[in-house]
Image (tube, rainbow, N blue to C red):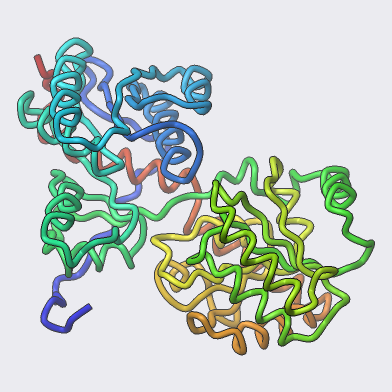
Length: 411
């Protein structure tokens, strides 16, 4: 960021609630409405469901509005309500109509607070919140593109207009403070959290890892380097392929794990690079995996080679929760998740030579060194990046605003 945009004001971490979280006044259960484009897949969607479950467990009522998707059934399972609205649409007319729909929903359900997690729904939510007088919360998930375009920057700015603005990392918090001039008293840094009920090596039976080994045809005892992430240029798959070529080892398996999501040309480019570097027996592309804990257990080292800064980097946190060494690019949220020399390595962006060197170190760790790193990585996640911490801190933000309203309703 330009030096002229820096601020001397410190960022504020959200306070963590102690013990079992509660929200709202005792007079009636508070009603929390979260809005996002869809419930298909991804970290934003997962976080929405996790917070909805925390609201229910804290004695409140959770409503999620979106255009729908396969994750809707999870809301029913946890006792939350889903309302289908065309919130994925970005044209101004639909955004205005959605504002009216949300306003009616707020009044009919007695919603006490609305939390927006994406820009188009946030515009509708902002207008609805202002018309009904309820608190408005946003979560800033990334740096967003088009900052040089005044219209795009205006569009992005809606994510800074919450009564509280949640940033998913200190990196994003600094970005929001410097570029959008969000006052520190409105900003709360709440890192995403890992669900330790799923990502726990003690709860991942060896049979599941064996099944995955057979499915992916990994020879017994062969070290596995894994880069989880959709196939797209900024995730750095090409950098990893080049680093593996420099490493010069053919006794390892490098797995690029993720769908191309219609980017057939990029996949073909990766396959051509693999062939050009004569790595067909080493680098394999795997489209999908329904058991990520087992995938992490199969890996000897997990790589995040993103060429652009990650807002947070869930893969890095999940892999550490499973006790795995992580090599990540030295920017963005990675700097907060990885402890260099303790839980993994940070390498310069797009530096295939540095990545190859880090791979060499990770793959030659002794059993004792690997076990020690594993303990530190797990402890790092459990202390800083759990689902429970994320939910407690989010509910604490809700309580700040609901407390200001003294539990009053909306209608």
